[in-house]
Image (tube, rainbow, N blue to C red; front, side, top):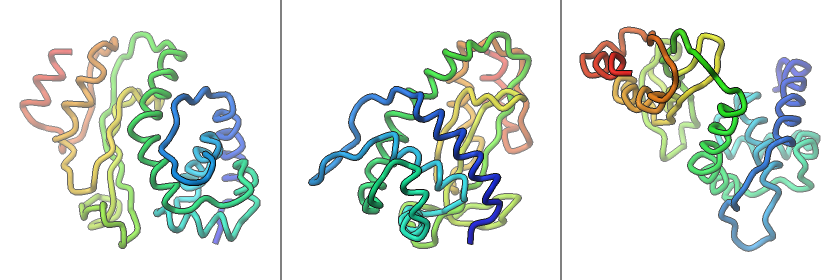
Amino acid sequence: MITNFDQNQSILQILFAYVDSLTIGGLPPMTGRPPLCRKALLKCFFVKTVFQINSLRKLTRFLHQYSSFCVSCGLSLVPHISTFSRVDTWFRNEEIPLLHKQVLQEMNVGLIPCVLIDSTALRSSLYDSQAKWGKSTRYGWYKGYKTHACSTPEGVILSYAFTTANVHDSKIAPALLRDIQNQNVLFSVADAAYDSQHIHEIARSM
């Protein structure tokens, strides 16, 4: 069941307009049929995020059930789940890092008084073979993934990582901090999960 339809529709319109303004290079791996529009597929992933759809299989069902969203994304037919899976991997490993770098350059972020480091639990389908079990303050024990991010207080993400739910926050923090070493950061803020000597040393060296 769709909730907050009007609000989510407005969010999607903004996101879709942004996707249309992007230059997306390279080609995601495809087999058989002619390649689909990469921007259309990226819009489908935004639909998945906005409506908190926790698996690609549920995304394909959603697009079949609510075909207007498929059309809004620029597709005449719902892609097969295997297509979504291949393109998801391609975006995550190749294209999203390039887009993120491009956005930061366009924003021209100057002096950053402080950065915030934290993670967010992302629940998956219980049938997701790649997901792992982990524990979060919001869900307790859950199966899925985590997004780890280093951001400004205003919400500008400076560095990020995507892991399975069983990876402890402190294991990822050093890489997040190293990724922003060239940024003009004064100090870092994080909760007790990041309280280790190694992380303190990296933060002080920035």
